[in-house]
Every structure is written in structure tokens, then in C-alpha cells.
Length: 558
Image (cartoon, rainbow, N blue to C red; front, side, top):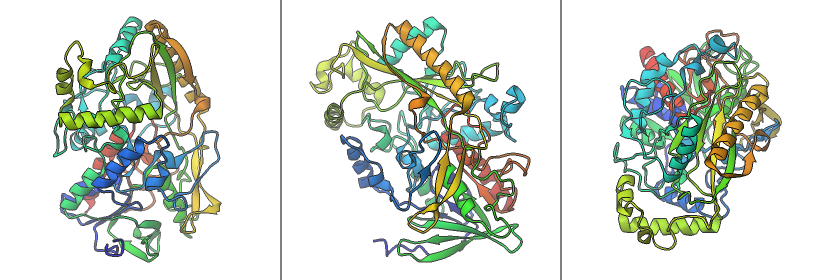
């Protein structure tokens, strides 16, 4: 099957490296305007059977993601910082990228995130503002299909409605809401790239409850835009590893990328413009691997900033128990959030947001039995929307309709568990970085990425404040706190930002406000790696918005 696929180079206006959200949006946007686009992706293309297999694996007592979409030799890395990187547990190499396994949270960054130096004397300002990105945020929400309600008094300004109505708050959300109201803390709907109704030829959510491995297609993943790009004439080649990026004699423009196919054959793909869209780790690694006499420290790295200023979102959580039922079901997503503490007057503590649990912890065996019962119930109910499902259950709830395996409560209590989580901002620091570990090589003989990351004083102070707020919520709720997850307990998450950052000064940044590299006139980067600061919100919607903006700038030059 692999041998039958044509992986030879082709004529292209634009070559995109990486088929995750960033690469998919760039490819579709440019292909839809008549440009010849080729996309090179290291991972494989998954089919419908693969999605169901992922759901099955997600329900297993022992779930090892590496067994599904990673090659231990190809995707080797080292972790040398205070925070363990655990890369292969939080990223995906496949057509669609890590969006194949994300939670679907799509908040925007706030205005202050783009103005950290102006407002607080911290970090650097972005060379663009929230207002510059605002129309692209709206486009990205329409393209992805975002469900939400404009009910966030502390959220960034909006001028347009969400494409779909947001999901209603859960029962446990209402418990948190009572406590938050007493404390003067606002709660709001969590925007989700999950269809609350049929949208863009994809079904509405039917409640499987395994959202990380959504088998119905209700949750957006970037393979949607990969298919759209192909329908507009783009060519997507999977299972090809890009080894290096080659420039012309003067080092002013990129001429080709070198890639290798599964049978070991190397090719050179030429194009007029090149877009690196490999995420916050592999993007700087590829540039560092592409050194030359003109760029001895790595391609596009005259500033020395490639690989530096790595950021992640530190997170902490508080677990507790209540004597009354919380009716927590493994519905798979968070439906409520609070941005009360996002915008702040003083430099520190910094921004964080809160999300409120909808999943009571239980044994894997119990979870698996309940998921099986859920699947069987859904086969009976068909494609019922969440609102119709709630109506079917009745008010008060008629638990007999659920059967013994699904009757509320979903835990054996009392007491009944619940938790609240917070994610915050980390300031960019030069010592947090991606380098090459030349003592260890991947299956292609290349040095593996080495990740060095620590939280820093700002993040520590911010998350200590977050834990204090979480404690006050649980105490007001009348819950008994049973556990606290601190920064000392954490590993690196899936939000890898800042390693090829955007800026106006070529001496300290890698790309300009258009996401074009300062050093090479036809090399662009579309990734969270261009973030100047990371804020405290999930990055995927911002990645998509920047990709759409970058595609507009490339189109202007073609």
C-alpha cells in the first residue's frame, strides 16, 4: 500500500511542511485561491477505522499513545529541564496533527497578552495587536465550527456571534456557580470546537464521552481542512520526513526542502514560498538542523532566537469531595470557565483562567464499563443532540431510562468527587529552549531535540494565587479538599509556544508581523512557535487565526 503512493516532488507555488492546524489552514486558504500547494507530513493519514480504534484504545485500562502514532526511534528526544517534556504523550504526528487528540477548547487570547511590555514592563509586545487579529479570530471560529455563548464579562471583546450555540452548563457547573457567585467570581461558557448541531457536513455531538478520540466527527480536527485543501487542488503527501531546508547561494531565499520517503529515497521539493508549520518543538529543530556556512547557528537564526523563549501553560488543580451528588458524567469536555483573574492591574501575579470539572474520577474498569454502556445507549437513541438528550431524560431526571450501568450518580459515593483546574501564563525566558542533542540521534541519524523548561518566579507566583482561589471556591462550596496538584507535580503540557518568536527587531526575533522570517524573503512560519507571549489561554484558535493571516500575506506576494 505504501509503495503505491506517489511521493515524488511536484510543481508548487507553496510548499507547506506539516499538516496540523497551522499547515492545513495555510494550505486550504492558498489552494482555494488557485495556488499550487504541496504539503509534506511526517506522520500517516488516518481513516475512519483508525478513529474508532483510537476510541477503543482510549477506553483501555492501560493506554499508550506511542503505540498508535509514534515511532520511538523517529520521535526520540531528551528532556533536561526542571519540567519533564513528555513530548510523545502530548503531541501527534499524523495528517491533522495534535488536533486529532485535543480537547477542542477555543478561547481567544486577551488584549493584554499582545501588550505585556507596554502594560507591565514584562517580556515583549507582539508586533500586532488584538484588533489586528480579531477578524481572523472570527474567520477561524467559522472555519473550525466553534460552539459558544457571548456571556463572558471578563473575556476579550467580540463583535460577532459564535457560529453555533454553546453547550449548556452541567449540573456540577451549577454547584460551582453558587460558590463562585458568593465569592463574586464570574463563570462563563467554555467555547468549544465541537458541534452543538450539524455544521459543515459534520454531525452534532452525540455524547460518546471520549472527546480526545471523538469517533463521530463532531469535534473539529485539522484533517477537515486537509481534505478541503485537497478538494481545491492541493497535494498532501504523508509519511515523508523533511530532513533539512536549503537556501540559495546568497542565503536570501529558500530553494528547496529535502525529504525522505518510507523506502529511504530522498527528494528535493522546490517552490516559490515555503511555510514551516511543525509546532513549537519540531519547527525550531528543523531550522537548527538546516545550518550552513551562511547560517552556522541554524537557518533563519541570525538573531540567535531560534529555539529560545519556549513557553508552556503551567497548570494546577484542587480536588475535593461533597456529600451531595455532583452528577458528574464523563461527558468528555469542560463546559464552564472563569476569566475573572485573567486581566490584572499589577505585573504579578499574572493571568490565569479556571475550568470546572465534569468528570468524576473512577477506576479504569468502571470507566470502561460505563463507556460501553454509553455506546450501547447511543446506538438505541441514535444521533440525539445534547438538548434533546436532556429533554428525553426529563426534569426531574428519570434515571431508569439510563439503565443500571449509567444511572446517576456515576461514582460510588457519598462522598462525591469534583475538581477545579487553573492554567496560567509563563513569561518568555531565553533559557527555556529547544536545542539539538548531538549525543543522541533519531532513525534518520539526526540529532534529537532537547527540551529545557522551568516555570520561573512569575509563573510560580501566578499559580500560587490560582491555588488560593481554588481553595476558596471549594471551601465556599462546603467541599472537603482531598488533593492539590502544584507546579512541583507537573510535566510539560501540549502547548509549546515561542521558539521562533515574532517581533519587529531582527536582532531578537525570528519572524516579522506577517510571520515571514527576517532572514529569508520566502520562508514563513505558521505555528505557536511565533507567539511573542503565551497568555493563559489555549493556543489553537490563535494558531488558526495567524495561519489565515499568514496565508493572506503569502497570497499578496504570489
